[in-house]
Image 1 (cartoon, rainbow, N blue to C red):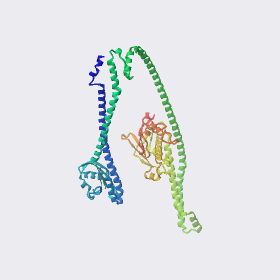
Image 2 (cartoon, one colour):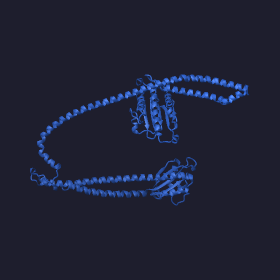
Image 3 (cartoon, rainbow, N blue to C red):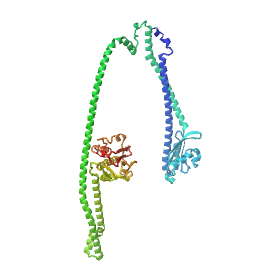
Image 4 (cartoon, rainbow, N blue to C red):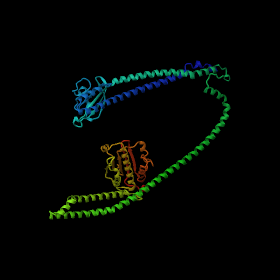
Length: 585
């Protein structure tokens, strides 16, 4: 107790109140200085951004106005625009310079006929560089003894003649003036922060004194006034907090040791039981996840099997139709050859009659005029040639149908990918043609010299069909809200490019459209089963999943997608030229 009584004299210089206040004050000063430094840094950054943005907005505004006004010859309005922009805060000067360096318009009262480089020689190099390269230039320099930001923006006009002749818009901003404004803002914020720190420090001093120091002082007084520890009386005004709880805990500690030991044993047993329960739950959860994954795999296999059966049935149907078309087309082609010879003979014979009997009887002459014999003689060969072209077209369609629907064997075969792509495009041609809502979709084929590929042709044709169909859907979706004329100016386009990898071991096919593109979130899910962004009834969510399965798992290749919203989508497919036996199996 005597030691407790000596407490004030021993720790007077290191009292808790002083330590708390000193620590809090130091923390507050540290936060304040950090805030001031951050504030100063942000103001400097904002100054740079404001200078750059103001200079760019002035030059762009003046350049945009000047391009049109120069062609109209309104130089007075150009001068007025320059004078108006020069009245903005911190703007020293705004000028317009012709391609030969002459001053077309300049704020202020100085003559405008002088070369601008002679007015500010320090800007001559920047002016030449901007006029030569055609790119805007921003630099710091000293104008009339003051720090300034100079922004130079090139612009073109039909009055300048050659395409490489460019005029310049020059804006000079006073950096020191804007820095003064920034310093005033920083000073005001600093003063406000200091006043706030002082107020907070006073409030915290009062709060610490009321809630911490006074209760401790009352407890210390009660301890020093007690003769012994067993006569210690808890002051009534002491709040019910951790100090009172500590005194009660020490008195009852011995009585509760045994109870705590028993409780510890029970807790240990309960923890063991809980651990066993958690292990059981983890096993059940893992079994449920395995079951769910098995169900998803089964559904996936079912969907793929259904899709494969559909494609197989469709391939057989298409192959049968193509075969049935070939027979009459072959007959028509052979008959048209004979018909051409017969018609040429008849027309030659008719010509011989006309030469032998130049003046036929009236009935023959009237009949020739009635049937328009002269037109028939000219049009009949053309009609037969058109029929030949139509039969060739039908035969090409039949060939493409047979190429697209060819059945796959149990091992890879050599296949020309260009033929597969062309047959797929021919089948989709009905969707590529122009209609009343849009022009035709352009298909640009940039084929390189690639070798035949050992693959499963039917499966690859299905991949090409799925990707090209998705590209057409994306283009049609991007056409919503656009007029027919705007679509003619910027037509829908699908670009197909083929080539080889650097090691010449794989063929690369790139299919790109200029549609709406896709977000990063959608791009991460496009190969998921049953995932689709199309409306109900328009997509199954299996096209790209099957494409991934065919390219990666069936052909040991790679497929990737590059897309950003508004910039279209490009699919890149890599297929090895030769398939290994185990991959084929």
